[in-house]
Length: 218
Image (cartoon, rainbow, N blue to C red; front, top):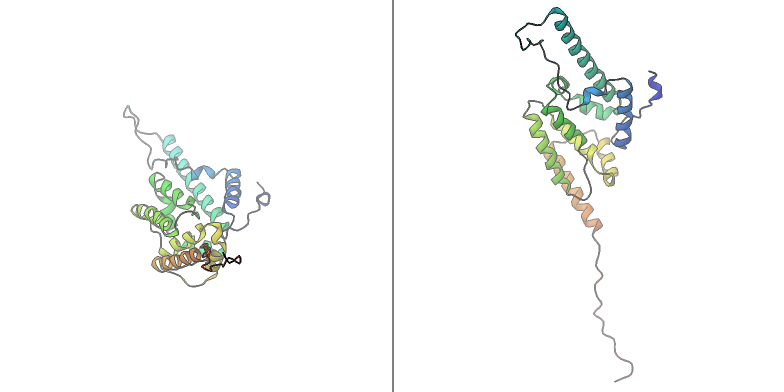
């Protein structure tokens, strides 16, 4: 396949839906998108003995080896194309993960949690910190599976997930070279949200207390 047919703009935190559609089209055209299926089970490490107690023959052993190799290569290619479609800053954030742990574990509960985490979208009509807390609940579940998510990655993920109305603030954060701890970032987020609330607060006009005198003299 000529990959020039699928021109990917590097994802910088904007237009996620469009970028996701393009990357999925590319992975589908390359016939490796199946590795992202959360229902996909990992091939068994060793061929199993049949129900009748017959051990696997050489052909079955070779088949299982090829299946595992194909899956591992597909996962690696998927990862490579996804990382290649990220801006330099997001690439650095993602590659700080223990990618071997992320993509080498069994694709059951872990892959569902990771997909839920990465697909999480923040919205304007809910408090930002409440949504950050929801993300942290997911992080705790992922880390319980012995998958480490560094704080710098978590902060970067939250920045990318900020709603469209926060676009300017998001860009400002992405351009900063300093790294925030999660606690520091949540403080910044709270201050920014409170500032926005003050700016958007509608000022109720105060009723005038001036008393008018009836010119009729009555």
